[in-house]
Length: 459
Image (tube, rainbow, N blue to C red; front, side, top):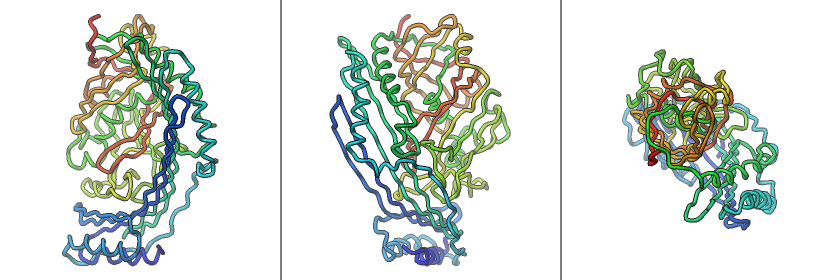
């Protein structure tokens, strides 16, 4: 569609009283290749194309979408949405020129033959499967997505963006007698096929197998309150879920966050500084521009324990009288955007991993965390420990299983007393009211002075 036609549609958007109108065009191609025990089990492709139309009057919102991106179809949808308002026409600004961007994709995945991709996955799959005779199943997946978007609104925004994501999953299942355990590794990047040059997936294939085999000998942990050392990378999922979501304006604006109205107040240990960065080069959670067409940025959330900011989108920003932080996201054109995280992490401290373990007389080392649940309005959470070890007299001893970390996000922040200097990011998909989106979670290794650990052990 021509820019002039989009301008005409936006001119129509405010005629019956809305004060903001927006068009979100999307064209996305995704593919998945799966390999299990050396055999290709799935090759699939999907395409998503359409436009979302949003109108605002103050903080009231109406939203609709269609996969027919013709002028007439969008105008018809717009007429239906306009009927929600009955007031004087609003002001529409002339569309600006889009800002340039550079993604630096070295090997676009659509230029790599499927045969080359399957060959690479089979090689990794065989590395996992051959690690130990106890490995009975190895699964290796590659997912690739290219999303082209164009956002235009009545404030003059006219911005395109291209998002290219690649992610590899490595799963190992180990069996001994009637015991079965699973190991899992995953890495995702804002990259094309060069991800295989940037990430040591052979090492991760071995790590997934090692973890599965190691857990076969793990003992059930005894429940109790104890110090817990949470490892770097995906260990940051606790901060993401229990603290990051309550810092999104979608919760703060409604007063459904324990951090509402606390800017400038102490909300964490002085050891804690945290950010959400939307534009880390090559990061899984990266965007050049958010889904309202605003440039992404590095948002300081907490500095030395003091709350400094929230993640703000346009609509919720109106409720809070706050400017956008480039944090508005949506899964696709079928969703209205709202405030969401990109790459959220606790910043590096000054300790080392080795010293934190050495200085812990007794406790749990949570090397890998898995899924859990959280109540955003209160910050209460529980998370499963996929791989854990006891710490005794400053040393890692036997593996444990069945551990569950139970607590409250706003409380646990004050209990962090050690922060290492080994920051890493882990990748995941975050689900919320605007759909499922790629995000990074992260942290250095941290120690929580005390936290409730659930378990079924008796020793």
